[in-house]
Image (cartoon, rainbow, N blue to C red; front, side):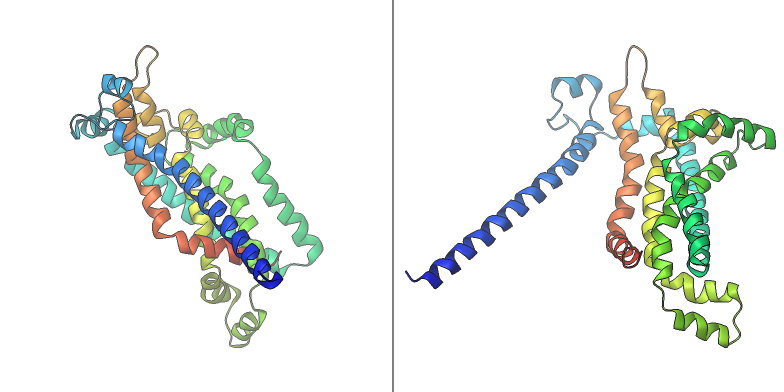
Length: 286
């Protein structure tokens, strides 16, 4: 065997090993995500005794009784619409405001934009536990306590840091010729933003909407403290009603979690490509 053939064979073996290692890692990562979801779905059809006797087996009957009880007893018929309203409104408002802030920061002088950008992004470092008491007092003072706005407004504010972080580099990379051309055609700043900038920021906006939407949908601590009244509770708080000090209806808990998880999973699968392109676009220029 010549030295050239030996080098080619060695190179082919190396590529095979690298490909095999990558495939194994991807399979393990997929199993790490899929297996808990599969266990959750199977457990949602079981009774409590069946979950403990055969936690990884198939249910004895594929009855939807757990889902019916979860819908009635956890009040999902009320908490699900509340969660949709709160998450949808907060995501839309925070994404739109983040786009406005990002576009404004991309136009200001560097010494001002850097400081403001840092100030917004620093909001990611503030834990919700540090602001819950002043937030409680503020909402009660202004008369919003016990309403859905008591959740929507804090979510909008807490969604801004991530939106500004992702959208500002993307806004700074937009072609300035289009913006200047729109201004020369007589467009106002609002028209430039709405008709030129906003469509170009669409990939980043979708990424921000998914990232903020996931944590807003699953957020538990703020609704637990602020929305303690049944009329304004969200799904994470409603699911806790099945967890007791001495016994827990695990079948109903898993059924509720499946109902809560399904919209997020479906939305992510439908928007995976836009999510990836948005993150890539946002990283082009920083």
